[in-house]
Length: 243
Ligand SMILES: [Zn+2]
Image 1 (cartoon, helix red, strand yellow):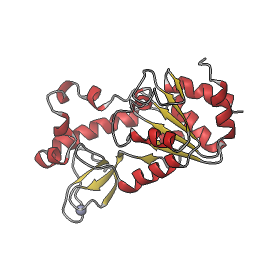
Image 2 (image 1 turned 60 degrees about the horizontal axis):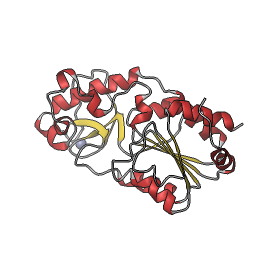
Image 3 (image 1 turned 120 degrees about the horizontal axis):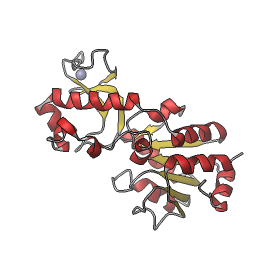
Image 4 (image 1 turned 90 degrees about the vertical axis):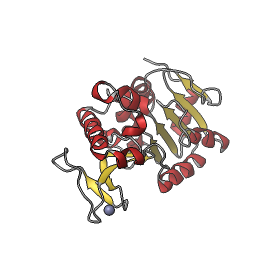
């Protein structure tokens, strides 16, 4: 088992507001490939922008829709892993936890997390490409793109290349990061801005910042503690210290 340093155990026992920030590494441990790793087979011939940008959807909505239908199937077939479950259990045990995720697969909710701040949206939800109205869940017939009552096409409610992060979600994430005393960055490369700024923001506002990732990242030099390892393994070990 991964040894958890005493100072982290102490911080977790005394934490008032824990912020947990997750990235693609957490999903990968459930078998969900990253965007680029998923671009295999018949998808390999496309540039990422053709599959995940407003221009790409405008040019060829059916191809983009099919790509997301395929990726959504992979998310539905995946199961939450030990990291998702440990995070949900910490939410139940601790007085205040804010979960911020860059993942769109909905696995945190399936593990029992109530309201993660989804910086990049959620692949299981739709919104109108024209008027942005909430489009609810996917239809039973996943091959056909549903229409909004404005006449526009529905698209997955995820953030595409060239789009901004949802302002209220990013605002809430920044607010939590400024007021946390313990910030855990889990399975994220810390390369994609503005999300990657959050642990640095927490650090500047006095939080104890812990990075959990198999490899070093740009955050490693600034974090108070770096635990190199798989998210599921480290989080299960951390949870076991909090009895
Ligand atoms: Zn509409």
